[in-house]
Length: 159
Image (cartoon, rainbow, N blue to C red; front, side, top):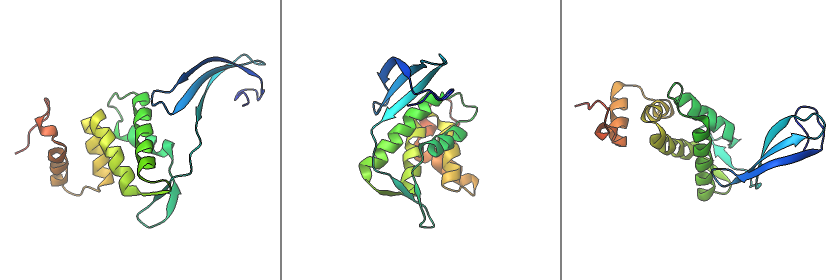
């Protein structure tokens, strides 16, 4: 491991702890040469997981792409990025439990929807509207009813 600032291979580990998801070790390090501090995350290496897209092309599962999609859905909703990182970890775990090599994009989308439903109802509806390609106002109505948000305080009940 080299310092990301000066490239020196010598550093001191200041703190080590498991990540919130429990699937990684977070280490706080200090470079022996420049003295700057940085964080590393160590994960067990898994076999690559591929997502099969609608056009049958394959793409490696990308945690950052998944996080970006969830971040866009949660924009201006006050959801901490750490909470989304934890959710991405659960999505990835869920996908690995189901398959060891390939999963369809529909499986990824449904797993993300399940996570967003528990995080923020507006983000859930935003993501669903893009992922499920909503074309009418009735599509929004049906996803709200499907998720049973109409029973939660603060939600407008549509009759």
